[in-house]
Length: 116
Image (cartoon, rainbow, N blue to C red):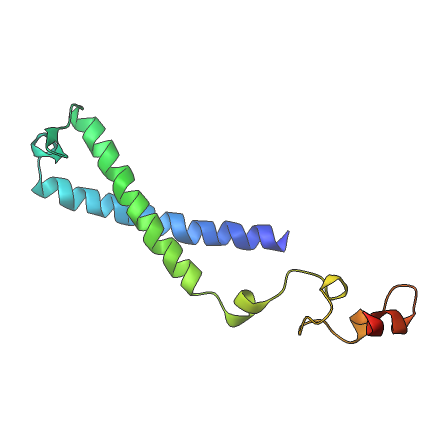
Protein backbone atom coordinates (compact mmCIF):
# COMPACT_ATOMS: atom_id res chain seq x y z
CA UNK A 1 0.00 0.00 0.00
CA UNK A 2 2.94 2.33 0.60
CA UNK A 3 4.01 2.16 -3.05
CA UNK A 4 0.49 3.03 -4.22
CA UNK A 5 0.43 6.01 -1.87
CA UNK A 6 3.83 7.21 -3.10
CA UNK A 7 2.72 6.82 -6.71
CA UNK A 8 -0.48 8.75 -6.05
CA UNK A 9 1.51 11.56 -4.44
CA UNK A 10 3.95 11.71 -7.35
CA UNK A 11 1.11 11.79 -9.87
CA UNK A 12 -0.49 14.69 -8.01
CA UNK A 13 2.90 16.45 -7.79
CA UNK A 14 3.01 16.25 -11.59
CA UNK A 15 -0.59 16.89 -12.63
CA UNK A 16 -1.73 19.61 -10.20
CA UNK A 17 1.05 22.17 -10.84
CA UNK A 18 0.74 21.47 -14.57
CA UNK A 19 -3.00 22.21 -14.34
CA UNK A 20 -2.39 25.53 -12.61
CA UNK A 21 0.32 26.55 -15.09
CA UNK A 22 -1.91 25.55 -18.03
CA UNK A 23 -4.67 27.83 -16.74
CA UNK A 24 -2.27 30.75 -16.36
CA UNK A 25 -0.63 30.08 -19.73
CA UNK A 26 -4.00 29.98 -21.47
CA UNK A 27 -5.07 33.27 -19.92
CA UNK A 28 -1.85 34.98 -21.00
CA UNK A 29 -1.76 33.38 -24.48
CA UNK A 30 -5.37 34.09 -25.40
CA UNK A 31 -5.19 37.60 -23.98
CA UNK A 32 -2.54 38.31 -26.62
CA UNK A 33 -3.83 36.16 -29.52
CA UNK A 34 -7.35 35.88 -30.92
CA UNK A 35 -8.31 32.21 -31.44
CA UNK A 36 -9.66 32.91 -34.95
CA UNK A 37 -6.30 34.38 -36.03
CA UNK A 38 -4.49 31.11 -35.31
CA UNK A 39 -3.49 28.76 -38.12
CA UNK A 40 -2.35 25.14 -37.94
CA UNK A 41 0.16 24.26 -40.68
CA UNK A 42 -1.09 27.19 -42.74
CA UNK A 43 -4.78 26.30 -42.51
CA UNK A 44 -7.19 28.20 -40.27
CA UNK A 45 -8.70 26.20 -37.43
CA UNK A 46 -12.31 25.22 -38.17
CA UNK A 47 -13.38 25.14 -34.54
CA UNK A 48 -15.47 27.34 -32.31
CA UNK A 49 -13.77 29.80 -30.01
CA UNK A 50 -14.45 27.48 -27.03
CA UNK A 51 -13.01 24.52 -28.94
CA UNK A 52 -9.78 26.41 -29.59
CA UNK A 53 -9.62 27.44 -25.94
CA UNK A 54 -10.08 23.80 -24.92
CA UNK A 55 -7.37 22.53 -27.27
CA UNK A 56 -5.06 25.30 -26.09
CA UNK A 57 -5.66 24.41 -22.46
CA UNK A 58 -4.95 20.71 -23.02
CA UNK A 59 -1.86 21.57 -25.06
CA UNK A 60 -0.51 23.79 -22.30
CA UNK A 61 -1.45 21.13 -19.74
CA UNK A 62 0.46 18.46 -21.71
CA UNK A 63 3.54 20.69 -21.79
CA UNK A 64 3.23 21.31 -18.05
CA UNK A 65 2.84 17.59 -17.34
CA UNK A 66 5.95 16.83 -19.40
CA UNK A 67 7.92 19.47 -17.53
CA UNK A 68 6.74 18.36 -14.09
CA UNK A 69 7.25 14.68 -14.91
CA UNK A 70 10.83 15.37 -15.96
CA UNK A 71 11.40 17.23 -12.70
CA UNK A 72 9.90 14.35 -10.66
CA UNK A 73 12.04 11.85 -12.58
CA UNK A 74 15.24 13.80 -11.99
CA UNK A 75 14.59 14.39 -8.27
CA UNK A 76 14.73 10.69 -7.38
CA UNK A 77 17.18 9.78 -4.65
CA UNK A 78 20.18 7.50 -5.27
CA UNK A 79 18.40 4.83 -3.21
CA UNK A 80 15.40 4.88 -5.55
CA UNK A 81 17.58 4.77 -8.65
CA UNK A 82 19.95 2.02 -7.46
CA UNK A 83 17.62 -0.25 -5.51
CA UNK A 84 17.06 -3.73 -6.84
CA UNK A 85 13.46 -4.89 -7.02
CA UNK A 86 14.44 -8.58 -7.02
CA UNK A 87 14.62 -10.31 -3.64
CA UNK A 88 18.24 -11.13 -2.62
CA UNK A 89 17.73 -14.90 -2.82
CA UNK A 90 16.28 -14.59 -6.37
CA UNK A 91 19.15 -12.51 -7.78
CA UNK A 92 21.48 -14.28 -10.22
CA UNK A 93 24.74 -15.76 -8.99
CA UNK A 94 27.48 -13.17 -9.29
CA UNK A 95 25.19 -10.21 -8.68
CA UNK A 96 27.10 -7.74 -6.49
CA UNK A 97 23.93 -6.98 -4.51
CA UNK A 98 23.34 -10.62 -3.65
CA UNK A 99 24.16 -11.06 0.02
CA UNK A 100 26.26 -14.01 1.19
CA UNK A 101 23.51 -15.27 3.49
CA UNK A 102 20.94 -15.22 0.71
CA UNK A 103 23.09 -17.43 -1.53
CA UNK A 104 22.46 -20.48 0.64
CA UNK A 105 19.77 -22.65 -0.99
CA UNK A 106 16.58 -23.39 0.89
CA UNK A 107 17.62 -27.04 1.51
CA UNK A 108 20.70 -25.80 3.42
CA UNK A 109 23.39 -27.21 1.16
CA UNK A 110 25.81 -24.31 0.73
CA UNK A 111 28.06 -26.27 -1.63
CA UNK A 112 25.48 -26.20 -4.43
CA UNK A 113 25.67 -22.39 -4.58
CA UNK A 114 29.47 -22.30 -4.46
CA UNK A 115 29.69 -24.81 -7.33
CA UNK A 116 27.31 -22.84 -9.57
